[in-house]
Length: 166
Image (cartoon, rainbow, N blue to C red):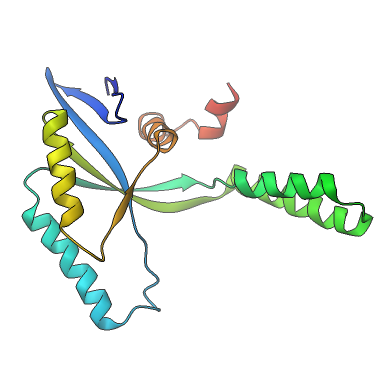
């Protein structure tokens, strides 16, 4: 990895060649809630995307750390506002559970990487991928998610929380 462009694309180099990538999180579905026809349509659209897409697509599966900072912020605000000692104890307990989960829990996440030899080519590829399906959709990963993912891929023995504390 060479860096990240102003547009948020990952700049990569391999054997002297420069290319670009972007990372997306696919929309997840509850298979028990889907009809067989809906599941078939999603599978068909994913297969169609792989057939029509001219560039490389990489699907990455990783055990990603739990992130619940928004929930922790909510509980901290509730703790500050409450005057009921019993409710305060419950809120503090829930906050400690969230903190423990964030330290220890990992969940399997999947990511889709799209590539291009140049930024314009990558953008054309991304536009093609967006129009390839109506049900199988994905949203762009944020810069913090990309950095965390790359750090985990390149330094698997170091936990993300250890690098955030440093």
